[in-house]
Image (cartoon, rainbow, N blue to C red):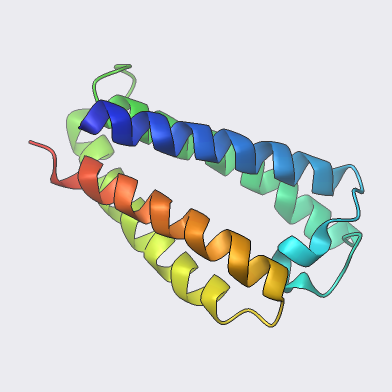
Length: 126
């Protein structure tokens, strides 16, 4: 079960990274992110999207390590990391769920829900 959860999380994070890269490069899809106020993100939000890409890579390492698919982190770090990320994506469910942007609300809320569930599976794994 942890392998499936890690792979689901990693694939979703990869897709989010591609999405964020598109935002960094100026794609007019900003209504799906950062509150949806801009079609093309201003510079400060593009920087935030670039930082998100790096964070998603770190999040994926936590998932893959926790599932035993890679061995890059001490067990305690990946365990605590999984719990922290489950909580992070739980907050993401709420924040995206109350977004004024309907496109963001209806796409990112379910993504955060799946990621939260995946990290909960990983956190509870023995």
